[in-house]
Image (cartoon, rainbow over all chains, first blue to last red; front, side):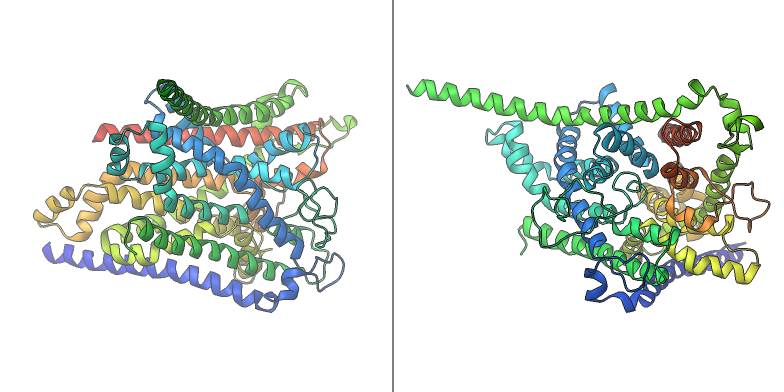
Length: 297
Length: 306
């Protein structure tokens, strides 16, 4: 009996190690494969030149720019809202029906399929506002998708601030709001920044919510034109804007260019590199900032 | 004079204090407004199929006939969504069956076998898996998995199996990280008591730690299922999108999210076809509400056990 259970224990341990190696191996294979396939496209020409529709040799410049611009816009929209909601939940919300309702809404919003959020965006930010497919509509739709995430990140970051810091501030006669604003927020910055960068990575790769809000086309952009009100200026948020992730999907479903597969390979490699970059930056910054803020330089 | 300024700054404090609190409170409640308006707008469009086009909900849910552009002479349009609903359920359940054992095993490895490797290697790996955009999963599925299935099992390659496999990888991080959290939350006293009784590590894992963490593990599985139901583009790219019930794992089929993404752009607003798509979006919304409620139920039962 004793011996049998010891053998089972050994077998189980070996199995679990194998599964762990399998998962790590799968991810490694995944990433290596993407970079290997996309290696030809990871050059300046592909990343900066405009897409071609009927002939080979097109790049992903405008799409890459749109993705980055969209991340920026949606962060500008979500961060103040999510941060305030997070402060409310961490510091002011009393246990009760309304707080429960807010938490329920956060959970629901967070688990909603992104297609559904995209359709909501289509109704409100595309049709109701009368803007049509624009970068701004896409950014707003993605903001709805992001709001619960940023709220959670902010709430956690503020809750993780040491109570001793908060109590010290209150003991010095600061009011609750002063404590939050001047003491807790700065102390929560490392947590906030890592969370925000992680979320940015997610927004960068989002496609389903953008198909019918940001649109699936991109006007010819003139990168020399920096007037945000001009139609072909890249800075104009009220123009149709296809992002990189949407472009990968479109190339595959419509695929008019003869080198569609190569474009998808290249664009995937670029997408993954940016996501990895976001991930590594947030880790690195998180480590540095938390060391700095805790006074151990 | 001095008294006056003291009074004024005191008033300033109050205004500051009050307005700060007011603003954050408003944004807190704003989340409820967003959710309610989302439900309201999707429902108002989604219910038009039933109120405006007079399709019975029973027909919508249980009819296999999807012919949204059929002529009046042939009996008019029919918008039975059964094929899409069955497709979604099949793909999500198969993905769950494939993914859960591995995900829970990884969670066990991270918490019970090697916390050090778990933190240093598996945690970052899971985070990177979460970060990989769904179109990239779809593209790899399309360029690697689909040809592989075609070569080894025959058929087109675009299949239920391909969709489920891609999804199983996508929901793995959700299940694994929630299950790992709940295993970590199991008090060490339980484990020590088990070891003291002479149990081996494996016996402790599957007789003590896993049962104690069960509510959390189930929560992870339900949220994984919710993600599987709502995923659109990755599945759509490898499924083949043939509107018929699959006869086997190797048959091409379609699900709710795929038909929405494909048809929403080329149907006119207000037509029965278009309205039916909104009804499917409403259905997805209702399904994710149900999942959240299930999670709450599980959580409450878990609390009772403690």
